[in-house]
Length: 85
Image 1: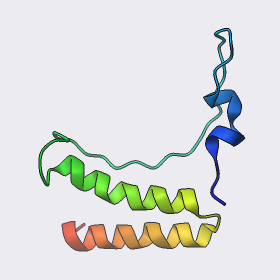
Image 2 (image 1 turned 90 degrees about the horizontal axis):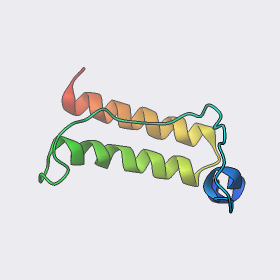
Image 3 (image 1 turned 180 degrees about the vertical axis):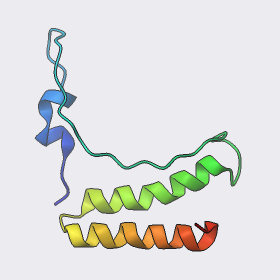
């Protein structure tokens, strides 16, 4: 079962009847640096997003850290193979 942020972290995602200030704890995120017009066909932005989506989806659907790390390492390997580094 994937981790459901809206259920598990209700205080961050469900607004109260009255506005209030909340403190968000430190969290980990994944990101890919990129730039460019998102509407450009085969542009850098779309290429970066295409790499980020499968990693984010796998992490969201997986509870197994080993699987997550293997996907990330495979993505890194493919990126280095294509773009050098």
